[in-house]
Image (cartoon, rainbow, N blue to C red):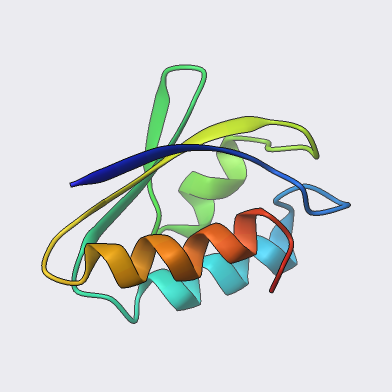
Length: 85
């Protein structure tokens, strides 16, 4: 299991378009993916869950990946959260 705190650096936060990209990327992995913000934990494979977190630029989230491809999942999803993808 990999857990890491990540600051949302995407200029517009984690609104619909980057959230959609995040979910599509997360679905490619077998690992379980969760995002946690201020104690609220949601599936990283649920667009509605992610949008309920209301992550603006500068928000801190915990990305958790757990499974056989957790390292690859964490690296790919971190890029989206940090606005690199």
